[in-house]
Image (tube, rainbow, N blue to C red; front, side, top):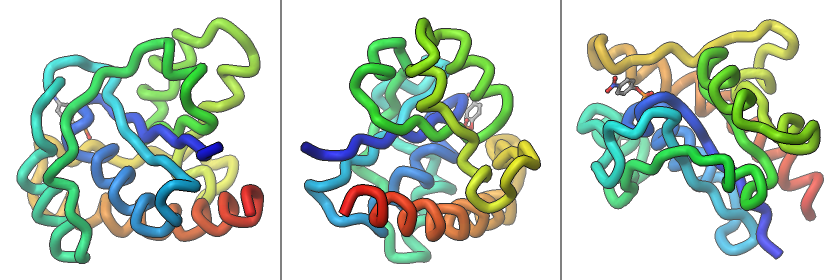
Length: 155
Ligand code: 4NP
């Protein structure tokens, strides 16, 4: 059985598509499935933001075939791990959890890099290109640790 991982942000066009593409690039396909979703539904069916697509491309990762998806409570049953980009995503997702088991699946993605510090991946949507570069670097560093842990745990 595959290990299923969901990345979540607000719009599912900037941060979580990058997180999905970056982590997927570090894990063997088939054994691991990485998807993403937004807690807002404005961008359902849309491509990621052009700036996220360009940022990923600079690093050899193609996220252009991803499409916007809306987080619904059924995902608690489908996914083994749910990584959220910021504290507001955390509150939104956890508010939909009906059991402790579901709640325990949810973690801030930067928890790997900054344990216990509650650090957010900042929303780059209203900013400039360098915000996307910074988001990429943060996600790249934290997913190095995450991928190592997942590979150890599910080998
Ligand atoms: P994301 O960024 O949560 O990283 O995808 C956003 C994208 C769009 C909006 C907000 C955040 N929006 O309000 O449309």
